[in-house]
Image (cartoon, rainbow, N blue to C red):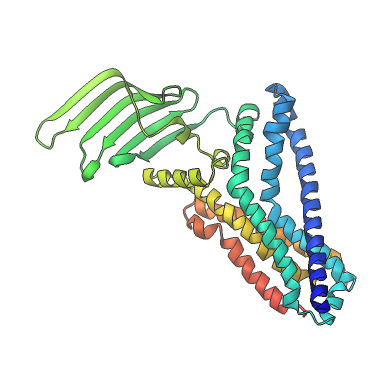
Length: 365
């Protein structure tokens, strides 16, 4: 019984070291990020007359959790490297293994801590951060504009009931689509084709105002009916927001909204669906990576080296940044249609799982 209690005390000793070091490191990161972000955006805040309440509560209160969650896996890795290397240099790891505790049993408190952080990150990514991103993204669009307006060319969308929209160009300055075409291809047959010189979206009523339009109805016989007019209002399952979907607005969608957006964009044949698919897979892949990087960190840090903790820390930083770099490359695979998001976004986890297991089984026990 006393031996069992000793193991419990050891577990809590490692868990406490793990979590305290991690949260201290991530809070330090938050302070550094806020300082650098303020210095970068202070001119935008002054120019757009952002109030102190907006800056603090609409932006930074929601900005900090977003970045802390984004970099949590890397800081899990560095945390394990730092405190485990220190335990190794102080001969604590040797003493633990010499007392009869197996290397696999030693991993238990590490995995418990990693799973706790991973579940916390998953919960934040699925429910808390999307809600927090709503005021953050709104603040950035108002006070830190990235672009003056959106414009796109040669846009194709599939709407419900096999209706297809083609737009030669869209201007974000006046919310107007030029050379607008709507084709009814229900049942695999062309029934009608509506063409307009321009179509302007009304953000108040949610309608499109077509100018200089004409409709050709195909009856299937030798005669086609043509109607035309100077102006007509119509409602489509296509809004101005569909042209402004980007990485930042997608971050503000919860899981249900994100799934619905992906379903709609796939139905429409929208090429920008890759951004939503990347975001959805990242919300699951990042928390899971905390467990992989923990195993990798322990395997690197439990062997005493002549260079001391410095060598472990250097190796940890190199592997941590290579993981982040690989994550960026994996997104490029999705954007270029090389691999589906469900494969590409998980590639870093697959690769680092193999590396972690190889190092784990080669670690001194």
